[in-house]
Image 1 (cartoon, rainbow, N blue to C red):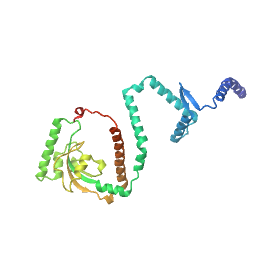
Image 2: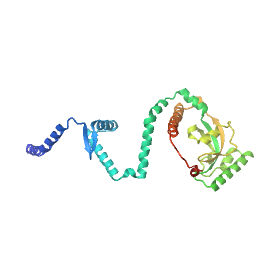
Image 3: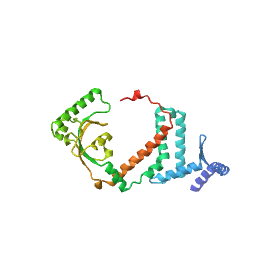
Image 4: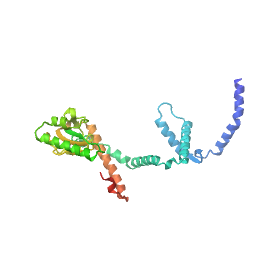
Length: 282
């Protein structure tokens, strides 16, 4: 019975199989794996995408048939998106341009980034000597980026009162408790934020703290992206006791940023850019 059913199926499929074999024989010299609404998929492109799929699978390796199926589905979806003119939608255009931006950086700068990633221990210690880990405390008044003029005036008035209290001899910790913003996380710790590396602090905060000797505090409020500060330097960490990998990462980050800035600076120097400064005034 089984044999008879199998034979019947074979007879039914014979014309289809014959047609497929004839088609294969006719196209055996072609490198076209598939066409999707006129879009040609060549074997070289298919092989590349198949190898990529093999490299990222977790459990069961994909078959060539399943990879081709995914490619066909992807291409059909892209074609449909274009029919619906999604590539002209401003939000989608922005996402596409973001991918182009990332792709340009990767293609043009990845080798330079790779070359810059090898940081010696001595280079890390030299960086530490110029940019040590610092221990600070601060009087902190929160001032949000979207603050009003009235809020800014109030914040500076509070800082002025804090400076006068310090000048009168009030201990720093008491001034912190009295004048720091209620939502300030340092209020109950006497302003102490412990040891922090350069990359963990606002650039303005770190730069002003570095001008101080241990025990000194800034005589004028320091404005950062978070608000206003009176900063007291409590100490600097010995560069012989630092976490080398952390400093190697910081050195690399700065090198990478310079590579990136130099590249974009080159693009800007070759371009015509017009900016209306009045519209971006703070």
